[in-house]
Image 1 (spheres, rainbow, N blue to C red):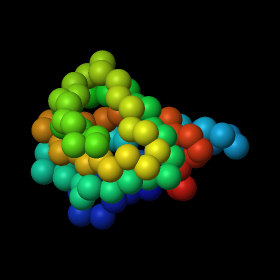
Image 2: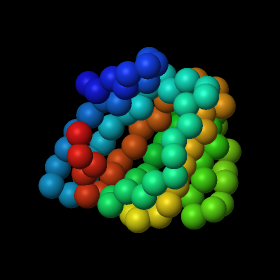
Image 3: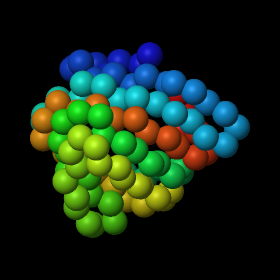
Image 4: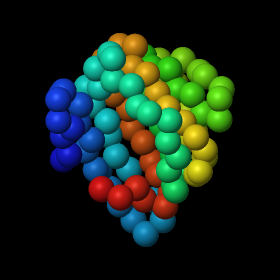
Length: 97
């Protein structure tokens, strides 16, 4: 399990194959904002708990428990946590862990 410094946010790798990886983000706290960045892998996610704003290619959506999302490979994106947030994510190819 990877734990970020400075808060209780954790990234837990769950499974990894040659073409896809699965991870869980747990306990991301309000005020956790990411700088805009692009990843070399596609991400699909499912919100388990909380709320966040996800901005992909300049379009913002509010995510809540039960919502799913997609971040295409190479797409500029950022997020802002509104309520303590947990999500499952699959990445293809697998994200480096």
